[in-house]
Length: 395
Image (tube, rainbow, N blue to C red; front, side):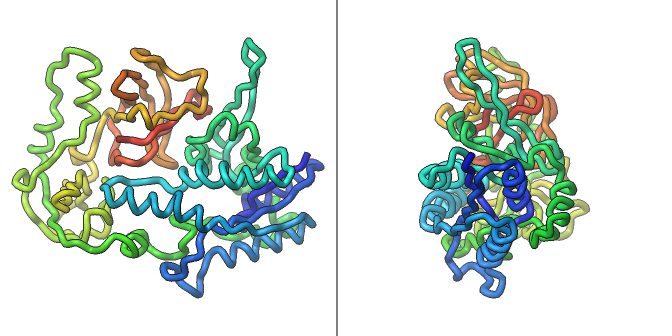
């Protein structure tokens, strides 16, 4: 089988290519160049050049064809511009999820298939399997990687059945140490290479520095909300229906300046996210202060002291109907239906017991345990055992 591997220059995709070659497949390596704006990259540490060179050396070592494709224009439009727009609105996007949906498993996949490939492989720690329903239709299953510390199924939560049908994740059954050991055994240059962190496409530049390229500083106030006020707003009244209760539990409390005390200044609410404590420059507290809310209209940040501050937690969240995505379309809930699942609201978070409720107003996820720092714009993903069956953007 002819398989195109997205060779990133890291150890994971390198070993993925090797395993496929070992299985006897006709393997072709493609490297995606996603970024070329040196104005926000440290010139002497430009990540894509180093990664491209490493990917080339791996391809040469394995004796497989290697090609670089420039997707920087598409990446800027689909991912970078989207990031700026979301932060400006006061939302917290996840570029990795979007990159997989819009770039790697869309345009990149189509490019690979146009080269005659039957499948596209990546170095994700995830698995794909399939079964047939009673009508003989093949159903594809997105499964968590066997290495629970590295499972990356969350980043693939927006993939479709069609995309999964053409995807391979060769290292999904392995642990990270096993992957590194294979790379060492066959002498790959990437064997001891560190994993990329954060916004890998712009190198060692902090997120605020990157955002400042487009979003200008704008001084605003930091207002501290105190425990008693937050507890008052989180007390549950009597509800006449489950929908009414879910609307209450998933609502965003709109704090006002006079609800607390001004304790400092910041350079732009759009540079921060819910749950953040670093970079606020707040002193004089026993515990760190965490952002619990942002008012983008008045450019005000609201904080509470301590990681157990009541205003930092929610037991439910809402996903608008237009933002609901079912990987398993056959399991899609109808209006009024519910489902017991495991769910997470960020990468590497432990899966939590939750219930999905589908109403005309949207999909609600109610957790057994309150969730900290639920941020608008992030993706929630839900699972049945180790299978990711759906996801959506938190509203």
